[in-house]
Image (cartoon, rainbow, N blue to C red; front, side, top):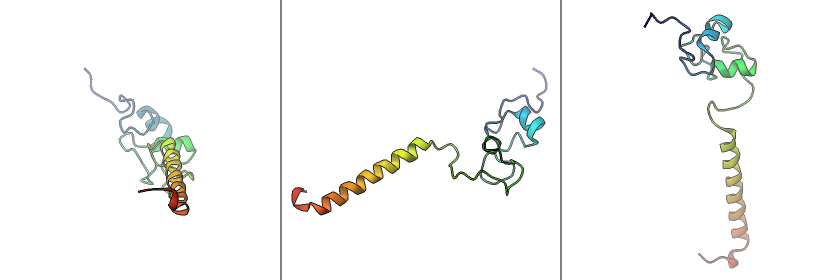
Length: 98
């Protein structure tokens, strides 16, 4: 086995960018998930069209890294159903036995 060089690992920091692309195309750090420390991964910034090296240039969408939007929608729907049920229960107390 030969000596390892930068770019040998496909994505050392798991930010969604290949090490070679980070070095050659974006000048980001292949060992740092968020090169500009703005709480958005280098990969997320490249996808969103912002500069992964500028902490003042970040995606305008309020998303949570690695958190599926389906979970947010599901949680919101479940919360609304619970709130609706509680309102109906309070309005019609005589119909429920607890």
